[in-house]
Image 1 (cartoon, rainbow, N blue to C red):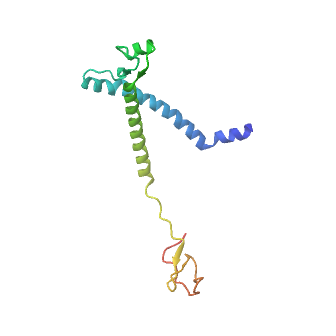
Image 2 (cartoon, rainbow, N blue to C red):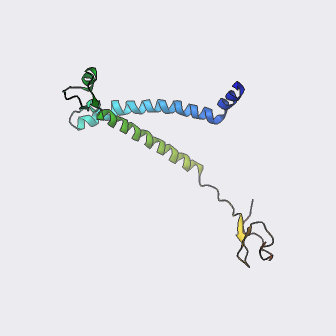
Length: 150
């Protein structure tokens, strides 16, 4: 069983996936820092000197100046500022993934065109295998295929 597990882990796809998860987690931290430390402060300044992380609704009925105060008091809150940060994080990550996938697809090029596997008999219009010399329905002799079949 240990031998099978080792063979499973050492397959290329599993290692690639593990590396992708680790890089994705690191990239997520960078995007989160970018959002909360670089992008949202100027946006909050434009919206009237608002700290986006302190946008919350206090459900306890008391007034707390900051989210930290509300958490310390044990108040139930809806933290929509933190939610907005998470949404911006997601949109940035999704856009970067879109750009990467788009570039990979562009580098791959168009998919190769596959040769047809059947063709029609010119006499009875029955589909016959592309390499056939006679039609199985009407037994007429078929012309050679016009497309090279590999």
